[in-house]
Image (cartoon, rainbow, N blue to C red):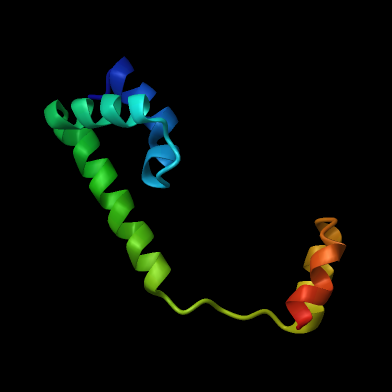
Length: 84
């Protein structure tokens, strides 16, 4: 059953897995993972999921779809770069 410490871990988990958490936050999470099997399973599963996703071939968007997407997100400056 998750406790307050587990919920706090989940707040910072994304930054931790991306390597963007502060050194203090990383140390706190790692200390927590030493004693909490449930959170260790969550972190390991997310790590594996991220690695599997990164290994998958990335789908390409048709040029007209990419252009419309970038325009709807107000990223017009990237439209020409993406077409190159």
